[in-house]
Amino acid sequence: MPTLFDPITLGALHAANRTIMAPLTRARATRNHVPTAIMADYYAQRASAGLIISEATGISRQGVGWPYAPGIWSEEQVQAWKPVTQAVHAQGGVIVAQLWHMGRMAHSAVTGIEPVSSSATTMPGEAHTYDGKQPFEVARPLAADEFPGLIADYVQAARNAMAAGFDGVQIHAANGQLIDQFLRDQSNRRTDDYGGSIDNRLRLLQQITQAVAAAIGADRTAVRLSPNGESYGVDDSNPAPLFAQAADMLDAIGIAFLELREPGPNGTFGASDVPRLSPLIRQHFKGPLVLNSDYDLVRAKADLDSGLADAISFGRPFLANPDLVKRFRTGATLNQDQMETYYSQEAVGYTDYPVLTEG
Image (cartoon, rainbow, N blue to C red):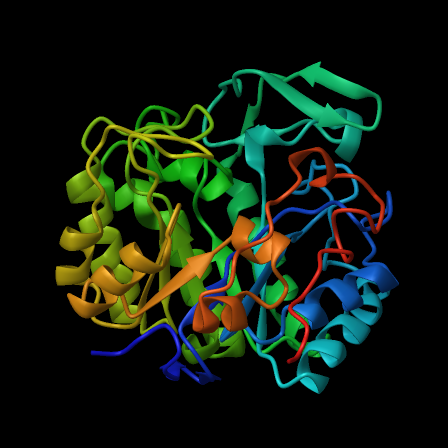
């Protein structure tokens, strides 16, 4: 049975181990969503991961409503990402860009644009803005003639990611973001070709994935889903057939890997009583399957040993432990993450977590 420390091939990507760094929003870019020099240090420190999945990265100004989050739609952003990817590669690492559109989770106070979604719905709670938290706004349903432009934004972002030196991309279709808002019937109330039946609700994910795969190669294109339970106010009344069909569709496209975020009932960053769907999805998706959410070494070994997972992605453990792979190998104690510095713009809680010393 493979272990966390054995290599794995993920499409065109060759990972030295199966300890994957999950995407982690860290808010160290500029207000214009341009990556900064400190981000190169942060990612290079974590290059011993088998694969780094970058923080969620906006495909357009409309799509990124998180303060100080990076984007990848402009030439300035592409050029600013290059030192990041070069720094990771210099340390022998592999990195893909997670492509992000927040949909109704964006706020006009950040984007300057009315939020959009599958339907006229409102995200519960409050949005983070440059002027503090504000109530979310009612989203405008995307019109039929807007879909070609949206898909083109994903394609251009993928091409930009490759130009910036990334080894591939991951399409963010999880966690209540725009694509997830189309997938699930609680948030998708459309009556056109993008709503109603499972086929219709899958249409946007399918079109985006096919278009990105055609542009940069299916073997450099991955997808992230969060199939079990509510996520940021987005849910589905019958998720099993929805995500089984999604897995069939993604398998047919031949993507590099599929990542699933599946919080349990005692989840520490989101929880769900809905049983995880990875056992069902494993039957429908034959490519590499990466599982995520509250894993430790014991759980990781069990799911690798059983064949349920081909690799495991770790989020907050990588946030606080740049040398997580070494700590796992040696059984060393892990640093504790500092939640109060997750989204600050400082080096504190970002690039200053200690690493193990030699000897």
